[in-house]
Amino acid sequence: MQYSDFFIRYVLLLVGVLILLRGIYFRITPNRDSVFSFFLFANGVFLITYFLHNIDLSMGFAFGLFAVFAMLRYRTEPIAIRDMTYLFVVIGLALMCSISKLSYLELAALTALVCILAGAGETRILAPRVLERKIIYDNIELIKPSHADELRQDLTKRTGLDIVKVEIGRVDYLTDSAQLLIFYSQKMP
Image 1 (cartoon, rainbow, N blue to C red):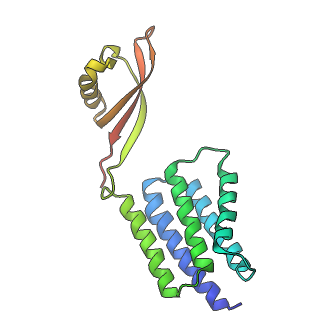
Image 2: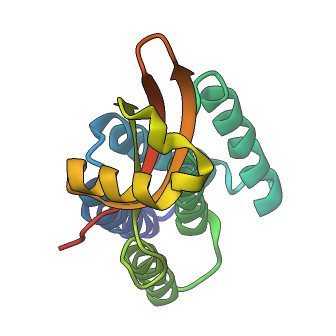
Image 3: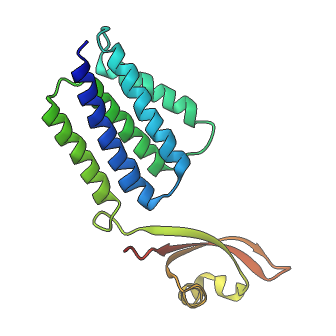
């Protein structure tokens, strides 16, 4: 085993994962637990596959093995599709850096491309960012379908948010209130 090969591949992985997680993911979703999990997952996948790559394993087998581990770990608690995507990308980077036959320059270029695509995906270039919030609303007269525009205007006036869509949940006629799920566009810097 060549130590220089291991360290160069490992540094490429670390730089790529740190840019992806700290520079892109954490900037939008400051969830330290997810960043920590994804970071350790990338390191674990890289180390195991790098040291097992001399054994006759195919890339498909290695990826399938870690996909099963990911499903077993994360199936017990719901994980957002965005988080699952970052987990998938981190696993892919780790596998690519550990056992691909690409040159170091090609590995660095592909890692940079993945980071650039993730960064572009987190901006308004791909799609505007829409957030959601549950609220209790006290004017149940406006929750009728015929008053949808008035409801959106009232919510915009009260919350100061750019309301895109409103979903009506549970309605309590005893307290004249309704649970609403509002979707609003986030103003990005």
